[in-house]
Amino acid sequence: MRNVSEIFPLSRYGLLGASGCGKTTMLSCIVGIRYFDSGELWVLGGTPGNKDFGIPGPRVGYMPQDIALVKEFSVSNAFYYFGRINGLDDKEIVYASNYSLTIFHEVSTLNNFFILFPEAKLTFFSKLLQLPPLNHLVKNMSGGEQRRVSFASALIHNPELLILDEPTVGLDPNLRKDIWDYLKKLTQEKGVTVLISTHYIHETAEANKVSLSFTNLLKLILKIFV
Image (spheres, rainbow, N blue to C red):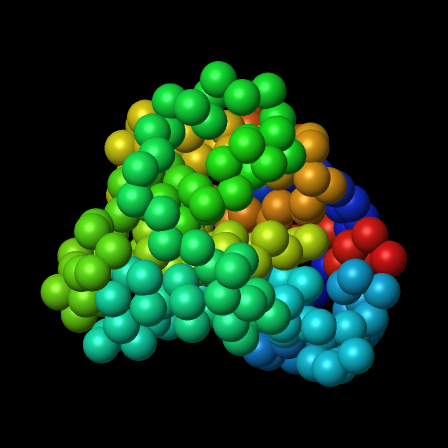
């Protein structure tokens, strides 16, 4: 990757490109898993890997392309684990059982929704992402189900920056639409910045801004709402 530069505050930023063009490498650098050979990277006012800025940590939600879940965890275990390591207490990681996704579309804003239904967060994500039952173990799920649990785990702690590495691969069109509707609400109502990589050209229509990555060259600035 060379000459990477761009500013994308408080938006849905689509990163479009074929496999092997550097999308995952760039996202890994943003969350502090990998490092550039040269240059500087500022995210949320600090450098990734600095514990004072929470990157990686609670300020960022990250869904990697590869599955990074404990196989012996159930769905609810995964939510609890990722919620706790990102600073949520037990009251904020609620296990609800009665909720219809239809209600979400009838409530005007996310803030109103979670005020009216504070107990519904976990079940909401289960419905939105069509997750398996909460007691199902990760090791007994299909690859697609595991990816959706990984997606929900990145959302559970309400991060300022949400980084999603090809989260909609293999999803049916209706589920993909529900996910994008939710991401729109996050950016418009809660001020979350969403950085999402994809190789679906039509999907980038849902983003505020799009960059193309090809032959390991990408022209953007990595300075995210300092």
